[in-house]
Image (tube, rainbow, N blue to C red; front, top):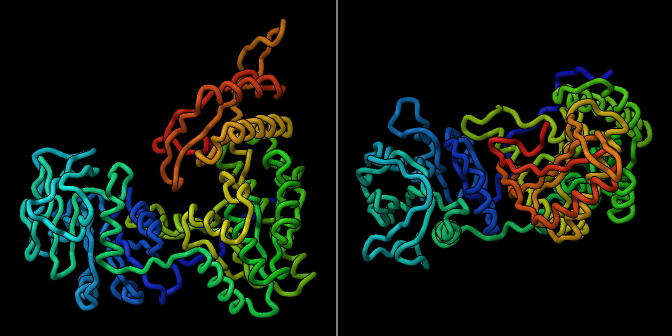
Length: 540
């Protein structure tokens, strides 16, 4: 019987290193806020994202090198619109912290410093040519030409420049799309330099973060690994034990290797084979983790247990609950065994990433608490374990960089993400051993063809979905009535948004030919050309 305990291990929603200098990004609800953080991190400068309503007490604990105000969907002059609190402005003034306001963030500067924001005569969405004001030598635009292309996304615009500021850039639609106050070290931009549609946007962000704010470019993964190892040794002590789930994906692999480097065999990794893994996955993960990465890993063969519980179940949410609940039960059983063998185990390793943290603290985010378990479901509070989350400050690309710094092989580091419920949510309809075997074969062929064509590393995630649909086909001299499968390949950097990958027709043709000919049970293959949003990456 799956666990029904609703109390899950509590997770903190903030990061813990107060001493590390940082750029603070205050989020006003923009869909692009996480991109600002990524652009800053790409400069090897550490940053964190906060709600725009963050208190002065919380923000003031940190050593701030700069503050960036994000865009947002509100109008700054409307009742109920979000604003930075007075105490935060006081900290900015007293510590002389440089500020960059982007889109709504610029309008927030205007609101606070007596400018005028109002609706424009026409909205501006898409690419626009920004022209520097004649004689402008703004340090924000150092190295940029007189005219450059940037991405606009706004209905309101600045009608009067705030007190102490001057205009340094405009477009044919708006005179004030870039403003500055050199004495107060404040800049405002109506456009979005953080998006890929702004070709020179990275240069502007670098000018602000590195040249103006003088932020140190010392966010290096090797240093991060060494820092974590020292911290966890101090926390766990010379005799403490840690356990954690391993899936074979990049996040759990990197976290497990990092923990093994810190405390050796006192880290106990558990791989649960739920019968819905990729083809030969359990065998391959055991070999790679034990032999190559020297991780103390045990595998629980629970295929029959999971598949028995999934009989007759077609609702995707119910599948997730069954798999998540059963995983918790098995993990609890293994925890008891580990404690019996090794003594008390006080800590749980978990692979929370920074996008999970962003989701929990963003302005008007979907949840006040972090995701309960980034793969399958929360672990019960009755386990009385304290969490260790070595990746919670990192984006996915930084996890991969850390993996390379730890010496993990490239194939492991660059593996595509795989959902906790596994193939169960890529089999639409009932999950059976037969349908799992069909999908495992098709998925393995698809991945093999991507590697052969040199396409795998260009894609963020690729998989095959087995549909609850059959179609008529012709094989040799006979008719067939078999399953339809669909290939899904997306390109993405953050998995928050994604576009379908433009896979070459030749590669599609090879996949189709091999899967239909080699996998008994599939006679038609489709390709998914939807993007996220509105679709999700996974089908269930």
